[in-house]
Image 1 (spheres, rainbow, N blue to C red):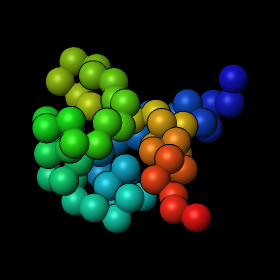
Image 2 (image 1 turned 135 degrees about the vertical axis):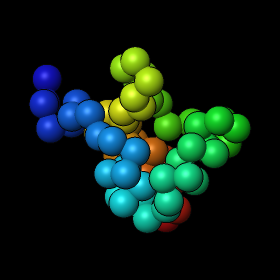
Image 3 (image 1 turned 90 degrees about the vertical axis):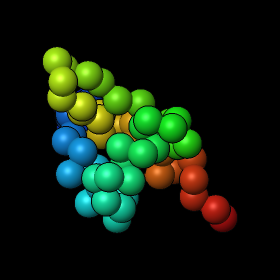
Image 4 (image 1 turned 45 degrees about the vertical axis):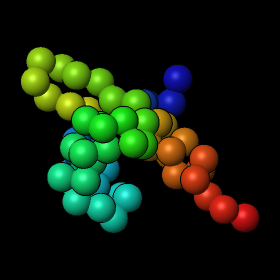
Amino acid sequence: MNTDNNQLLTPPEVAKLLQVSVETLNVWRATKRYRIPYTKIGRLVRYRACDVDNFIKNRTVQ
């Protein structure tokens, strides 16, 4: 298991990586427009780094 790949990222960290706002991530999550897997820990939302990487790779146009 690669700990870097399974690192949990906060919404602001993911938003910065994707160059979108945290509010955009919230809308995507609520409307299921883009399904980036996330984990709920209590009321906190966290994203695994590998899921964010897969999201980017799956949307890369060649």
